[in-house]
Length: 215
Image (tube, rainbow, N blue to C red; front, side):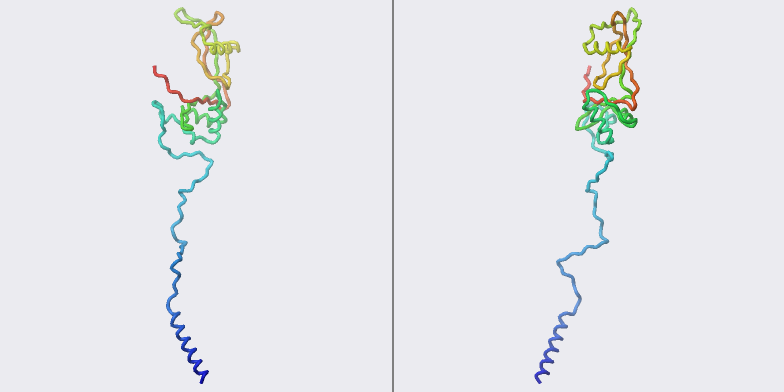
């Protein structure tokens, strides 16, 4: 009899347990799921490293009056080698040799480079600047400038041109200079003209921008 009661009690407990576990299973409400078919993550805000110069359009430059923006080349648009050449020329007291024809083309198409928040004048020529001197026949109505009236720097340059068989190539540390025509030297009137001497890829001269003096 006692065993029959225990068996009945066990049956009742088993039936009660089954009634509590029936029904659909649900996931915990505190967790979220991620779908592999969802939208892709945006990467537009992640910077990309590149060796190529930037070509994107920038805001308008704050240029001095009279300077056309089409004549200005931004430093960021230069190639890596052109940036190095520009930096060397900017720190030099004269010109530097260009390393390629493309660099010559880049700098000759513009009059200025905008770098470090300021404007720089650039002058690129196919060859180095040279001076040539020759005697001339001055007319009676032509004004001849005496050599002694020239500045000390012009006298030094003038002697150098004349004493070197009438031609002289400007050195890397020398700035161009103009001479009046004609100049009387040792009793002879001379004309000094400015030209270029051949160079492998041309030369570049960089100087800080200076506002032209209005007359």
